[in-house]
Length: 417
Ligand code: HAM
Image (cartoon, rainbow, N blue to C red; front, side, top):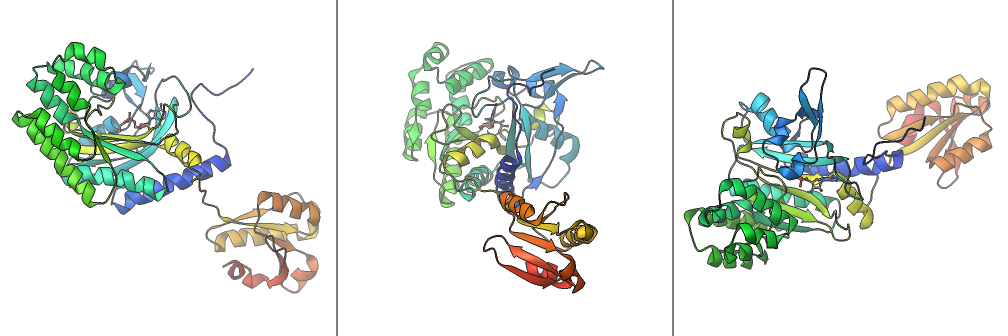
């Protein structure tokens, strides 16, 4: 029988997980520094949780299945709906705003290619219970700071679906057609869009891009109802906070996002050179989702990094770092000192923090062991020989400069620091 992993999934070797873990840790440290705390939600949920409000893009790509009791379940395609559900079930009485983060696997039945997988990771945050422009800005700034902490170059674009929805209302486009309009904007299909929204102004508005000057042009074009004006004011306030935080961004009123639940500010981050799958982050405000799930009307805003794409970007920009512990290898000169070396290794593991201690099980010759240790990248080899043991010592070989010295057994842990 030939066994292979399913299409769109990956195996990660130790070297790869070291790189991924270091990047994830760096991002979540920034989350923690902004006072966000980690939550975990189930890998599978009731399918309808995502079918109600996530939009066609997600619905078409869901892994849906029935369990043995005929419940219609799915592997979660994203986490925001799960967090909104968790809020309604578990968190609605907690003090708000709530600042939550997650770093987990998601599943979408998509056509796999580099940067697009069927099983992938999202590392994201949700800020629940504030509708203030500063909270939108915090989310945008946080995403930007995480990527800066990783040393990445990127472009961040901010839009506002609230402006577009208000304009569609002004133009008397029925709300049941809004979803289709947003899907077409997201796909860049302006021609089909013109069939639904005849007015030229709409296409001009979604074409507005650039620095904050674009907002002045938007004000001229929108020239209108209370809805568009207050949404535009909201975006102006958000961007003035983002400016105050000193981050780089562009306005792009053509951002529609693939998900249906957004109500206000939306943003996307791209990295040049990643090909078609260059969007490494997406997010925005969703003020109605919690209510749709039976909770009290609660504003919320958040984003998710496509973590695999972040790692691809690190590789592309030569910014890969792996946290590496110093490695000490403990070996006996002969079978006679095996038990004693085994004890020394265990002792070192207990006493030393931030080191890895390996034990040579096989009783190979010393020269062979040193060769293996060198190939493993060991920093030190502790050589346990009879003669040294008799005087309460072991030999420590520094693998970097190849120097050797005898160290008292009861000072061994202190020797490494
Ligand atoms: P999304 O744009 O669908 O938003 O996904 C967020 C990010 O996940 C994307 O920007 C992309 O980098 C990554 N991603 C999506 N699909 C794949 C895939 N098949 N393979 C690899 N990476 C992928 C959301 O999911 C929202 N929940 C984000 C959010 C949080 N909005 C508010 N809070």
